[in-house]
Image 1 (cartoon, rainbow, N blue to C red):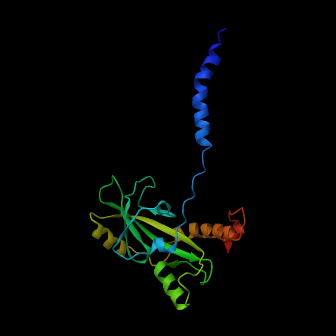
Image 2 (image 1 turned 90 degrees about the vertical axis):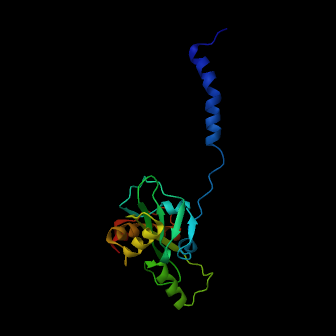
Image 3 (image 1 turned 45 degrees about the horizontal axis):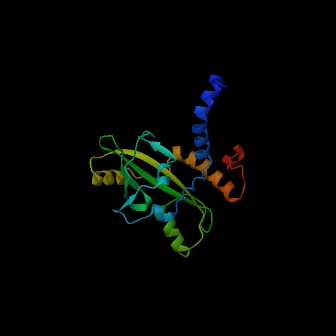
Length: 195
């Protein structure tokens, strides 16, 4: 007895469908390791490999989010980093990072250097259990070499959190506070943002 054409085509496609379903039901992906303060602070002038969390800047200025970044990252002072933008002539991405401690320190946004100075002045232990939220500004700068990029990054260094970034960090901070409090709904309410 011959099968109708629809049944024959299903038999041909069924093994592929089962394979796709099995691949989708495989082991859950491992969670990405959350950044720590040590990931942002290194000896200036050193290099570090690109890490997945470095892709997540809170505000991009002078760059397209689709730009591919080089995997070699140059460490600047005070938690900042720079790397070459691939396939773009003389364009570099510079990340400036601020840190908000939820515990053990006065609550405000710090750059990495002032966070360490404050922690030292309060005599915090090196292994103190700090809960941190990071905020990053990514800026595109023009430079032909790493030395030129570093000089330009220092020249353009923001002394405070830019207003365009401050609003985004306020939302991020409210989400982090709710997550640390164990709440499942971490979306900030309008009342949260008025504080």
